[in-house]
Length: 128
Image (cartoon, rainbow, N blue to C red; front, side, top):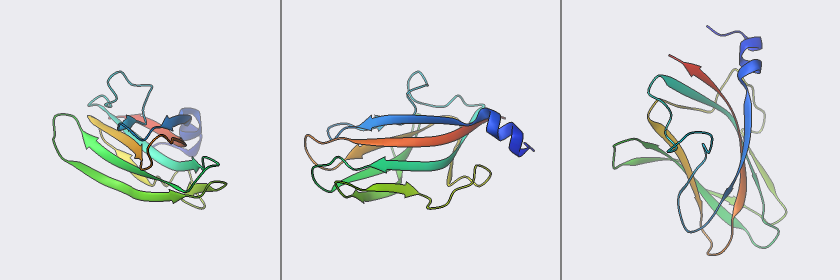
């Protein structure tokens, strides 16, 4: 079992621009987007910034390598123009909101043509 100090050392934060026209991997650090089979990614926080124009929705789904089906995790999350959505409201690095297993990918897309949103993830990895 990892200690809180171990998790702090592994903690990563990434911001990704999510467009409207294509599902975008939220794991740009991985070639091809999928986690290696011997790795798990613990997502502790999702933050989404409004685009200052109109309320825009973002969908986040979990996909698995080699599988045609996906699982919606957050769909849709409406984000007002000047809003900032934080999931969860109060978060802990030791209590992830979701776990992505090896071979998985987390993808997102917005719902209004021509608009994108910035999504920030906080996560840590564990090799099994």
